[in-house]
Amino acid sequence: MATNRTFTMIKPDAVKNGHIGAILEKITASGFNIVAMKYTQLSKRDAEQFYAIHSERPFFGELVEFMTSGPIVAAILEKDNAVDDFRTLIGATNPEEAAEGTIRKLFATSIGENAVHGSDSDENAAIEGSFHFSGREIF
Ligand code: DAT
Ligand code: MG
Image (cartoon, rainbow, N blue to C red):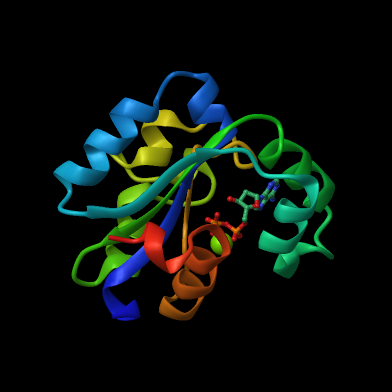
């Protein structure tokens, strides 16, 4: 089951800039089904835990501050090959390097404020999905 699911967040920059609708439209038009979704805001502890793997990186403080700066949309998406196909749809971490037509190319502001998150493996998709959703919130 985990193999056809990925986890995403529409990050605070994209929410503030009014891109929730356009991003969800792109996601569903690309064949992903939304199986869980919520509008929420990360606490400092949530963000530190979610991004724990980056805790030694120089940008960690900035990342936590940004990710807690406003509301986000969190969602679990389903599609064949969900993790890889979604990484393709969002584009490179740095929007300047992201391919034309990708979500980050279209909507991201900078490498730090890059509009969307996408899980990087099936294992992390499952961990990240359960970080935000209980079983009865997933349809
Ligand atoms: P991705 O979100 O593409 O998986 P990542 O896992 O390497 O990228 O990093 C997580 C987030 O951290 C990324 O979306 C934005 C921020 N980040 C990464 N590299 C950065 C950098 N060099 N400067 C500032 N923020 C950075
Ligand atoms: Mg990553």
